[in-house]
Image 1: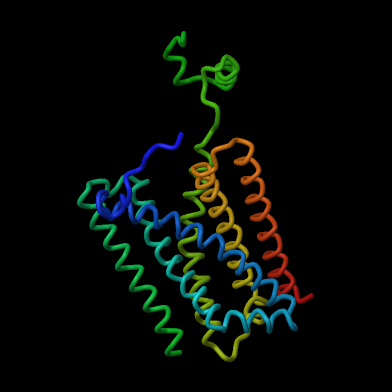
Image 2 (image 1 turned 180 degrees about the horizontal axis):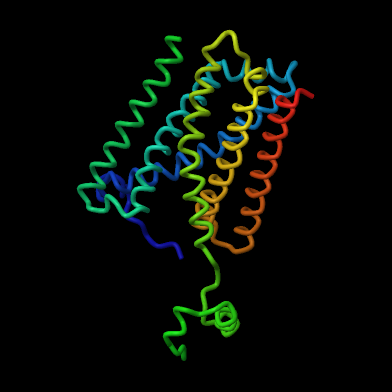
Length: 126
Length: 138
């Protein structure tokens, strides 16, 4: 049944919270990482096959679109890693208080930013 | 629903559990194994994933070592294979949960699950085959 939905729920009537935002981001980055595994398998096959397939794949990855995809995948990876550790801590029973959840949420965002910057600084400088 | 709760329920042996399911009093599925596998692969993927990303960064910036030479050595080949296995398992279990949330028809859910499972197995086998080809040098 199609029920009427209040228009423009987000963000005027329903306020974003770090808990729900990070949760849906965890799902989105997970899907993105899974899609990226296709490129990973492709790259491994290209390395093994060598020859023209490898040069074509390498050219695509080195292109602006390829670099953008790689950057997006790296952000998704670092975020999913840090939030995943937050999830594992919950599974172990730690950090369920609301203040703790907020603090760990901000920590996850900070860690993601730091890891991404470190990784890509290394690529740019080395 | 007549379901006599006795102390025997908590210490039920296999035969009793089967009888309970046949009489439609038990649960339909066993989700604990999947939950545990997801956490196990998650734990394994923390070092494996970091190693893989660090290796990619190093390969991209190193002029001397090529990807083919790097995968021909045993330790990187071994860890990449483990990363692919753990990663695809973890991804599949996660995608199953997503599909369960968004696909509402049972038939479509089964079809989608089958497609994703097939994709995971195909990608996994192809990746491992590629790494083995490089490692064995054929």
